[in-house]
Image (cartoon, rainbow, N blue to C red; front, side, top):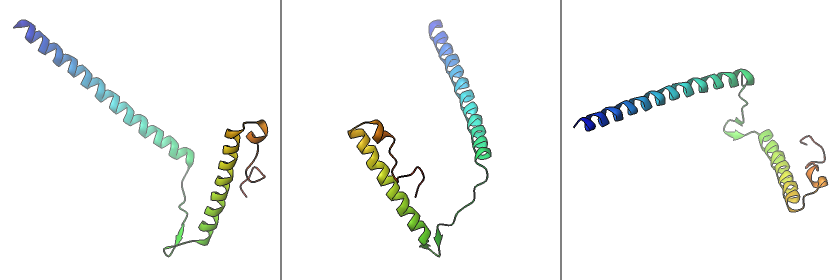
Length: 103
């Protein structure tokens, strides 16, 4: 009978210790997350919303920009595929648009 009581007591103590450790870890992670969020907001500065739609229609600038970005990404993907199929220094340092800037 005494061993059962001792076993129940030790299980209870062990469970309480695990609960305390878990709650402490959770609160530490919440504080860390808040701190990282604040640091990120300070580093990025205030954000300015850019309207992408005018009266429910896509702005022409958006369509043109998306097409340019899509072409650039397609060219980069083609260069990456070429490098993977035949690795060399020339294919490693080749640029998609002929310049290092986006056209």
